[in-house]
Structure formats: structure tokens, C-alpha cells
Image 1 (cartoon, one colour):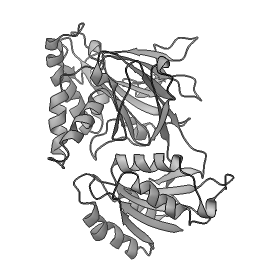
Image 2 (cartoon, one colour):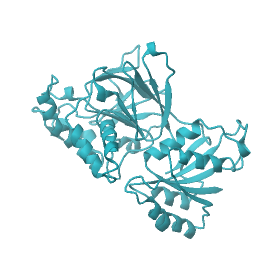
Image 3 (spheres, rainbow, N blue to C red):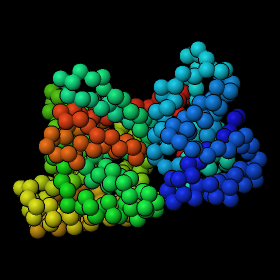
Image 4 (cartoon, rainbow, N blue to C red):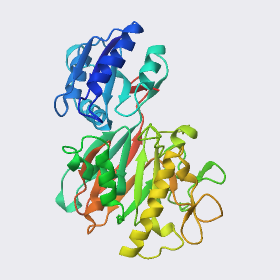
Length: 385
């Protein structure tokens, strides 16, 4: 079994190099696991170049294990680089045996869980990595071929995408997480005008909505008998989906049901949406309504740090957040096969999309379509849980 280690020295708090040298590599030596090469990424797509070079030397029937120290963006680069790479070397021209890559993820925030899983049982605890394939389309009149991008963690619009967009502008002067707090404050009172379509999970034929009272998923009540696609109208304060993970930080369980009620069916996205018009006291989009909704939004997202309790929050009669009563739920938690996002042409911020930390902008008149897909067993990417 070939094992290599790669880290991104500038991700997170920029301590990946020292963490690998002081923690990851010593524990591999203690466990008698030979890491043949240790590399640091130096430029865009370097991680893909490094893995491809090792993959081309790996025997056809042997998996390549990559201990990857990075954030979502580097993983995103790796997946997309290899998805379009022309593999040479030992695998040149081989299509009957797809390359198998085992990922041992060492996130920049919470770190050794995957490494310990790999060291305890190198060939066990492997899960296929579900990919979210997002197709970005220009207006039909432009006659430009759509662009497809693969993601493995988070795909979002609205607040999350805007925070990532603005925080990147602050990275040089604020390399730590403080920049995210500044960006969040800058975007706290924004609503995002757009329209979404929720696509059914293929094997179920339906879009599912989580019912916090019953503690289970139900068929989405807005689905039509003749059309399983659910129309989902804005404005939105929050619109974020994940695959594979239930959290974006150690304690921020934004999609907790990925783990608490795992999908037993086809690949799916867990989607969290907050729509201000669900509040009993909000019926019109005004500057005052947006300002008043800021506390509701942050109280709700803060509850995600309480083991994902945001999914249980309701509105009371005055539009305040509570865990009691029978008011409408603040969060709409959806499990779907994917979604389509059509931003309002006059809302520039609604055109921003986050794909595993990579920020893209939908052209005016265009759209983004995200569909979840899982590779067949023993093909593509597998991840140590």
C-alpha cells in the first residue's frame, strides 16, 4: 500500500507544517506505517499534480493512500484536477480498473480523527466520497458551454457564500478566523433574492423535509403528485447544503442529520435554508425588516454550535426564536438529490456561490444546478471515517 502525505502550509491558522512534523508523521512511525513522500503545496492545483504523479507510479490493482492536511479548498482542487486529468504511467489507457484513492483527511481545524481511523485499520472504515456536481450555466443566448465543478463538502449561496467571498479579501491582513467574523458582520442584514428548485432523491422519487416533532424525514408537503420537484421561493437569508459531513467547524453542526439520520438511499444533499417570510411577523422586504431579522438569524446559527439544535427552533407569536410552542420552524431542513438556484438578475450577492470554499459567480441570466453522486464501490475517492 502506497502512502503519501501532503499539506497546505497556508490553510487555516498556517500551522499545518509544524502539525505534520510534530503530530501526524510521528504517529505514523509509531504505528509502523511508511509514508513514502511528504510534500507541501506551493501553488494552485499543486496538490493534484502531486497526487497524479504518485498515482501514475502505483500498480493498477493497488490503492493510493493520501494523508491530506488542508481546508475544503485544497480537497476541492484535488478532486477537480484528477477528474479531468489524463493519467499516464502504469495506468495509461486503463479504463476497466478505475483508480482508487483513499483519503485520510487532516482538516485545518479538527485534526487527528481520520488519521487514527486509518492507522487502526488501514483497509477498514472506508466510505465512498459522495460528490456534489455543480453545473454553472450562462444565459441561453450566450451559447456558452456549461461548466461542471465537483465538491465534497459544502455548496452554498446567500450568507455563507457572501462571508467566504468577503473573508477572502481580508485573508492577507487577517490570516486567522477573525476575518470570518468581520465578513459575517458585513453581510448580517442581507437577504438574497432568488428562486430554487429542490430535486428528488433518485431512489425515493421524492424530496424529503425533516419534521422535528416526529424526529424523522417526511415527503416534502409542497411536492406535486405529478411533479416531484419542489419550487422553493425566496428571499433567503441562508441557503447551504453539504455532502459527507455534518459540520464545517468542530462544533458547528450545520447539517447534523447527515450523521444522526444517515441516508440509506442514493447520494443526497442535506440542505439548510432560512427564509425570512416564514416568520409570522415578516411579510415584506424592507430595510427595517432586514435589520430586525439579524438577531433571529444569528440566534439560529449559534444554535448549530449546540449539537445542531438549530433544526428544532421555532418562531413564537412575536417572531422571536424559541424551542417551545407550536409556531413555524425557523430552519427548513431538506434532504434532496440536488437543487437548482436561479438568482434574481438585480441581486448581485445572490449570484455568489461557494463550492468547497472556492467562490464562483453566476452570470446574469444564468443558474447553478447541484446534483449529488456517489462513485461505484472501489472506484474513485474513499475516505477514512
